Length: 450
Image (cartoon, rainbow, N blue to C red; front, side, top):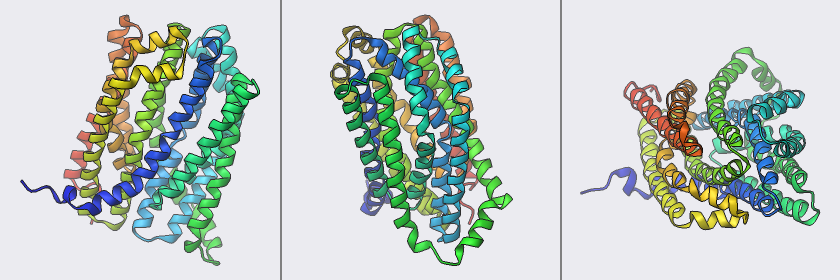
């Protein structure tokens, strides 16, 4: 039987992996950073250091990742502009998104006490865990301006079909973070404050490096007389409202994700310090899955966005098919790795016996998650690249309200098992609902109008 064109033609694989491999290599440094944090703090005397950073980091993640639409919308809009060779739109989206990132970072800094107090109230951790969570959050929040700007820079570079610059940006930034983490926590004995300070310094270092990459990538598109026209377009109501409307829907989608992940930490905190610490270890497995599969998702964002800009439905379908094929292979590989080596990885992260035993009790759920989640990661990339944010929003509302919380409620008597069962249901619900919407929109030619 003859192989499909998209599978047998090496040019499709080349284009996919030219974007995906650099992002997969760089993305795994993000959970690696979390593993180093967990390993460094997990080898201190008490579990409340790790639990405190887990709660504090979750609050930061909630605050920052809620604004992750800055990367997603930038990637989709720039990829489409790149596909139609629209130099003015390429520059306009970059500057508009940076302005929006700056305004939102100021808002985060102003509201930091409200965010912290609300988060601790919902988590209801022990007194010691709350103390270290507050220590971490109060330092880490000051990286907001750099962290949000880095979202924009990463999204812009990906939209420009440039995966090498984001790869070096993420790898170098996270290596700086890891080295500072080891120095501050183990060398200087700063404990939780050291982990937070390392992340702040690394974020600003990454911002400087990102500006360097953007400067070199944008030079071919910059003309001396562009500035006045560009300013008019940036502050034009129609252009800015379109960006805000797109970001609004992606924000609501991201809010649902963060509600579910935050609930994992907050409800786990009510089950005891060992549970929340064990979940912190296991969530690093989930982050590894998400960042690794996001490498493929980022690639499909850029490729389908370019296809939409060029109004090329054949290229669009081929990009989608080849990405799904390799994403499924990669998900199966992750399942095998977690099944065979999961307990060894947990032992490397922490030598506190009670946390090891607790984490091993729930490891089985992590073995299944690559298969239940692979679909939603790739479909997310397709919908981001085509800037179909409303469909993503509706899918996420379904997965949150009809999958995650109902499954948790029905299984809550099983304690922490109910959280991990709900997370698997949430991921599968996202994939199924997005798959249904994809088929519906593809049938009605909603992605590419020729």
